[in-house]
Length: 392
Image (cartoon, rainbow, N blue to C red; front, side, top):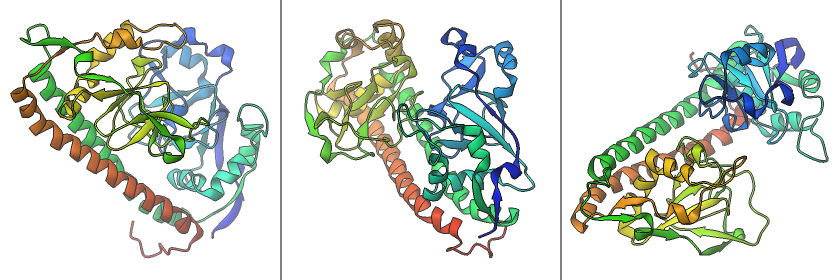
């Protein structure tokens, strides 16, 4: 379908991220010019859960590695196959590519960028990118810029690209709206929690975290898990943004078992604030702490306690190590908490439980929508589904 082209004919600019020696850890600052890395390329669009920044001056000194809205970002090494575009409504106007990515700008008269990114997420598109991957050592693309430009593909007319992409974009918009709703619901839940139990100093009944939960010691066979029910620090998202599907399962026969109502927190670099509420039976890696409530009625209360910025600050303060700090499991359990009465807990649960159920419902809908999108995508790209009647 369409005319076969070499990608180089549609590229207006392409550049790799800076050399490692030009972007050392010492260059990072708490806020400033945002850096894109693999954590921001887990979908079709570059996400704004940015955790690394440099100064404006440093970024400008690496100007060839600065990406703009409409640019496509591709991973060179690590999780190869990642490709996403910077949307027009991105949080930042510009981003600095990390050492593991390269950026590409396309001729807008030839290419509708979302369409091209959707194509590279299909089986056929992924194969074209992975065809020039190294076969040994750390996963990486060989001569990435040169080989990417040589990729050949059939490109429909710009109008046809927009029609095809519009179907995928509609589904993705619904998924994004559900995510925003869930973010608002989580913030609402935290506001209610803080209003009722946020001041542990003034509470009549004070305790510590170990009074309301413990670490899971149960085990589950890895064969009983899948990419949607296994959690590690790699597929948990920073900034309390939940999780994505795991890229792989552990090679061990067993791992930590988690149950509905448990709360998971990544124990590596806790300042990234990676937290997930377990909505069903699942499993997690040894780098993730699984908090099991002492009683089922504490599930929502426990999640709300651990979701608080105050808890993460406490966890960070007690962490050990410099390059890759880890939370101290004993110190974590000394975190001060309010011990609510049965009446207070029941009152909180009447609000919190429906909120968590709605969050779960929205996530379940997103999973169904993702499956629908991934089923339609190759059929749309191949022309099996006719989009000629779609009015833009």
